[in-house]
Amino acid sequence: METPADDILSLASPVSAAAVQTTTVTTTVTAPLASTSSSGLFTAPTDVSLALNCAEIDKSRQQISYRGNVFFFNVNCGLNYIGPDIDIIGTVAYSFNNCMGACASYSYWSGNSQGCRGVSYVGNLALALAEGSESNCYLKKFINQTVENKSPLSAVGKLEI
Image 1 (tube, rainbow, N blue to C red):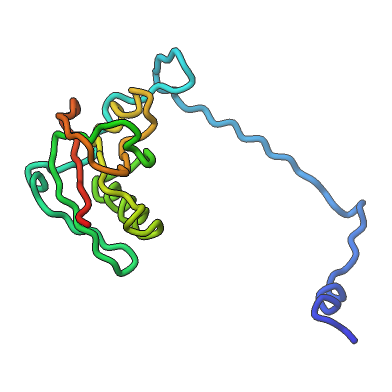
Image 2: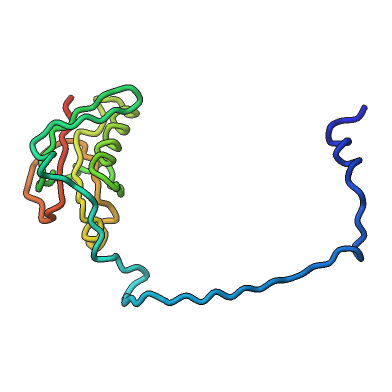
């Protein structure tokens, strides 16, 4: 009994090695190099600031939806949540909403009793990465202490439970 694979194989005709011709094409592209100065493998750019409209969101209640659930965050700009063993994880977020969304997702999947309690976000991505943190969004286990943040583009969001 023939299978679909047998049909395909019967359509193929043998090709002799002498009939195959190979052509090699080499292309060279020349582009100007950006001037950089670096003492390590990577130098963070100094002009990467992400949008953060603190005039609009400071002291507000922001809503994030995730998988049909609604999460509310009380937002304050220019602050940071600190304390021993407070961070769940740090990540790169390209907006404050994405940072709160990461917290909502973590809370959803871990259950509210073990979930994220808030976030600290720095909108100056270059500053955050230059300080060696590799993150600008930090999910918090609990809210212990609030301090002023040295970055003018910063905000915290405390998840309402």
